[in-house]
Length: 121
Image 1 (tube, one colour):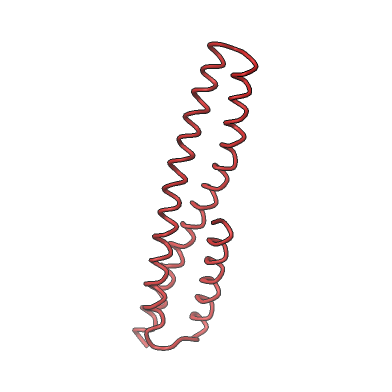
Image 2 (cartoon, rainbow, N blue to C red; image 1 turned 135 degrees about the vertical axis):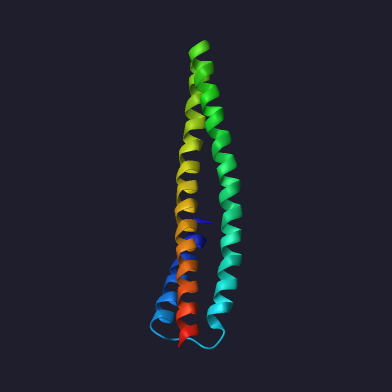
């Protein structure tokens, strides 16, 4: 998913750059806006799913740490480490999804601005 969202955002950056330079056909900006909103909704859903998973693992990590404080032992310590090893990549992935979706919101705003500019000319 990370490769897909990064590739799509770069693709849109290039299209927006071309549109700002004046390369477009009638109706293209409106079509791009609709396509972009569809892609944003897909990535928002992915972001929500990963938020739920990340929060669940964070809660499990806190519970495992609490359990370790109550009953210290090697097995419980291993559980704390295992959950932590899983939690760190989830946090990283969620961070990437969140930031990229925020950038995609800005891209949509740019498309709207381009469309308004073209409407005046």
